[in-house]
Structures are given as structure tokens and as C-alpha cells.
Length: 368
Image 1 (cartoon, rainbow, N blue to C red):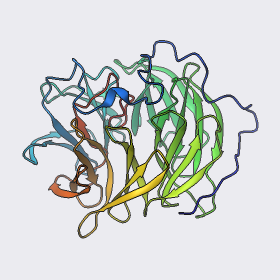
Image 2: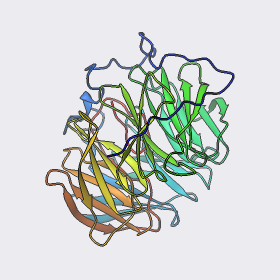
Image 3: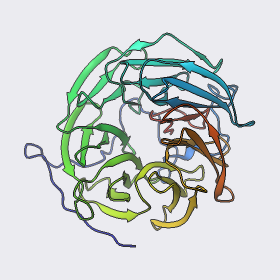
Image 4: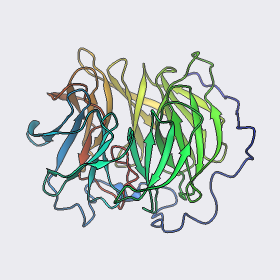
């Protein structure tokens, strides 16, 4: 497995700041285990807010302008909702009560009540490609990809609080440091990574991914390790995930996983991450203890695994088949492909819900 240490490229007007301050972000729920920020995400550890909600899989079909709702016990589509144009991701709110459908082409967020599996009145939000929430629940963070903006909004009304213009196209995925004071976001279309201050709602610095393997890296999903020491960045063009120490922004090391690495998901025991390789129809299993790829699960006949989530009991991985109009299900326990389910056209960021955790950072379900 070949690795490369890249060089940092910082914005000329910024100074180096530590990745993590000693004092956590004000209002953020305390970390339960300093060695594992996902300690609240253990199998079936459902909060009182979600424990009585029916388990469903919500699949945004980008080209069909619909959301397919699947019963994971029967593998059947039980409902289909119409949405505004271009649904991209289904995102759990910080308080776990609402699922927001990101319709970036139609410029709306559509709420779904996961307790009743019913759709609500859309809220106008310009270009909501992806959606996150600050760890203290104070702000919704809209990744306005086409607008080249990160927009901080009220997490309930979605009223704008601050607009941060970013210097790169395709800003779309993010994750937070252990203490919540900073977050890192990826810019898909020019291989740039951003470092932002949460409370100040400000861009601190930028860095380019190394061009060692390809001319134009294409960063996608971002996820931090259970101990909070390392960020992982999926790169579709470099065919792997970059590692970056949380206290050493801009220095990257590549782990090869497979063609068009795209999504990153931490398993319920916090020991491994599942990485979707969209270009080769596989899922790689990364072991955090030594950063080794220990398994690869292949879809029979190939496929296009994109974004998804892990079942509440930790036994299944559900992921959209972006260019095959299906959803794939993998058996995590036995490490193998299980089945596929037909949905609408171009399914993207599906969410399986409910999931364990005290609060949601957004995307298709990042819980702590």
C-alpha cells in the first residue's frame, strides 16, 4: 500500500491555528469518551427522541424528484414522496426530530416527520446541496455548492445568520473536530480543503490536496476518526482516502481503497470505516487501529455505491446505487453483498432512520 506525504498550501492571509482548543465549543454536549467520539452510536442505543420511530430508509431520487421510502424488514418501497427539483441528500436535524430533503436545483428544503413518515411544507433555501449542523445545535450549515457559499442559518426556521463565501467550486462535505471548535469542508471541483472556525463562522485557511496520483483530485466525503486525531477525505480521482491529522492541517497521506472512493461510514463498534468505491462497485473496510484495508465487498456484476448509512443494530450497510437506480444492502456481520432494491432515477444521499446517537451533525446521518 503506497502512501505519500503532501505539502501544505495555506491561504496567504491566514496564520496557523491549532486544530483543537482546550475548551469545547460552547453548548456542545460533552464528549462521553475522549478515546471515542462515537461512543453514543453503539448498536440500538436509540435516544428517547427516536426510539419509537418506525425504521425506514429514505432515498432521494435526484432525477425523478422523489423520495422512495423503504421498509428495511421487507426490502419493499412502501411510500414515494414528490419533492422540489433535484433532491440530493436526506439529512437528520440536530435535535433528531426532522429529516430534511435537500432539493438544490429547486431551492427548497423539504421536511419529513420520521415519527409519522409524512412530508411537510417545503422551506425556501437557495442551493441546498448538502446540510450540516454545528455540534451545539446553534446553526444549520448549508453547503451551497453552486453559489460557492457556506451559509449559516437558524436550525429551525432556516433564516440566514451569516454567509461565508468560499474560494473554490463544489463545496459539499464536512466534519467537525472532537471539541467542535473547527470543521473541515471539501471542495469537489478543484481539490481544495477548507478549515473553518465554528463559533466565528469564518474561513481560517485552505489547502490543496496533493496532485501526486492525478492531475485533479476530487475530494468527497469527510469523516473524523473515533479518537478525534485524524480526518479522512474520500477522493474520487485519487481512488482512495487521504488522512490528515486534526492538528496538522494541510498535510495529507493517501490510502488506496478502490476506484472513485466516495462515502465514509464509521461502524457501530468504532473499529472500522466503510468506504464506497463508486467506480468499481465495491466497499472497502478500513481498520482505524492501523489504517489498513482489511476487506473489500464487491457488488455482483458491478454497481455505483454512493452515499448511505448503517442500520441501528449495526448489521447492515445501506447505500444508493447512483447510476443504477437501485439501493444496495450489505451484510456487515458476514462481510458480503446482500441484495438490491429498485428505486427512482439517480438515487443519491439516502438516510436510514432512526439511528443511535444524542444529536446529528447532518449529511446522511453523522451522530455523536
